[in-house]
Image 1 (cartoon, rainbow, N blue to C red):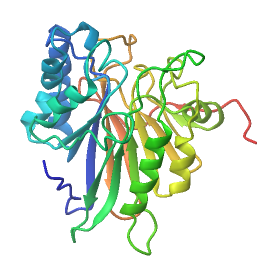
Image 2 (image 1 turned 30 degrees about the vertical axis):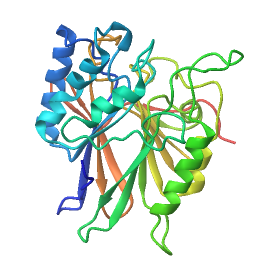
Image 3 (image 1 turned 180 degrees about the horizontal axis):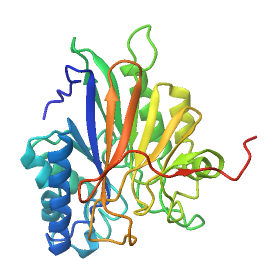
Length: 311
């Protein structure tokens, strides 16, 4: 599908982030997830939907490729353009990320792509949002944050690799208007960067952290590259189902989505939902809130004050 994303006439562009659906064969909990997504789409009427990983729980799927098509169907049927990145549970066992992406790009409205074959991962790509004159005004970057560490001496989750960082740096440079600063941009991936731990420890944050931040043990330098590139307003991840906080570190807002899927763990009283992001064409800024199951809009979350003094 050709990328024709444009700001509205009022200068806004709305994104809904669905994360961690953990879809599995279209079972009863999946149907609850679908109803939640239908309600969010009806209430928010977004210009773009982004799935930030763990779209399916591949080990529990009879056919993961059929399940991933089912998982995105409600958005595809709505006619809303959408994009996606993969998480650690999408391609466990012998499930292929390449085949999952091939399935996704055949669905109506899909703007995702596999990305360059020379870059590690499947789903490293960029989209732009045009202004009233058609010129690119904002950029959206999507990165495959991997699954699990492939180094025996480093346990835990994977990380964004050097060639992906190089790709981002080069892509951001090509999208920069001649003689102008970098385009204002947002970055989407599944596994939180190590800096999500730092921002929670050292800065005021809005929202909740009900579980440890499951970032990789190795810091590959992605966040430093985002800071150096300029223009990056915020990052958005999933992965930790009962975290939904955001905080600002070195000028970039590090943000969790709100877990959407019912076919996975949660916490009593912590409702499923979706994060909503409303970009402003002018002023390089955005607002964000959470739309909960049941329809409540959560726009003033609890404030967490760090206990560690900043250097």
